[in-house]
Image: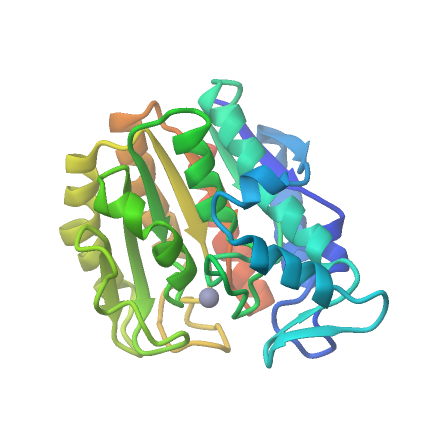
Length: 311
Ligand SMILES: [Zn+2]
């Protein structure tokens, strides 16, 4: 089984200031973990291309793209919100992060590889159609979902978000596609952490499961087994796109859930089982959050281990 591994140098150049938790070391420690544990030997390494405007504008407004271009600084920083700033490399990094998910989708759908993991940043799931926010600029997962539907002509794409924060941007951008049955979004998140919404889904068909602060992996496992998996099996996805955030880990400094590495292994096994049952195992996974560097590396390592079938 072949699994693609996407990276790009711009993921290491985008940074939002010293002390910011969404830092270049995040992708560095994941890469180092995969390398040192021999997992990269089982993957096909790919350099992410930049997403085209055409692909980006399926998910985002022209106004947002223009705002990002205007805010992009020649030097120093440009501010989007209190937590979200651009350096001279940010827009390039966001375009390549989205491009990784796009190219991964192309490769998985053409049968070149079975699955893909995109170790890229910035993350994307908070970015709405018209608004960058929450460390996110372009919504890589939503861009890839719309590409799969509109370019590849898929009829059913599932998007799975297990980041500890609600993927408000993904939900907003894909709301219409959820309503008309082309997309099923399933998610868990700590309620009421940033961005504070998600308890009442925008589409009646979206499955958002809020989790209580200090709850552990067993609460997530109940949500996945009782709510996600039955809905995914009814939906029968042709492709699964995963917003893989690892900030529900018990060591994460930005949230209060108690997941462990074993929980990331388990949740990935459930997704692989659904993908194997309905779509020849096709999963495209892209990195979202995760801010304790050691926990992030170990958790992403367990996730990748299952994607490549080494669990
Ligand atoms: Zn997060």
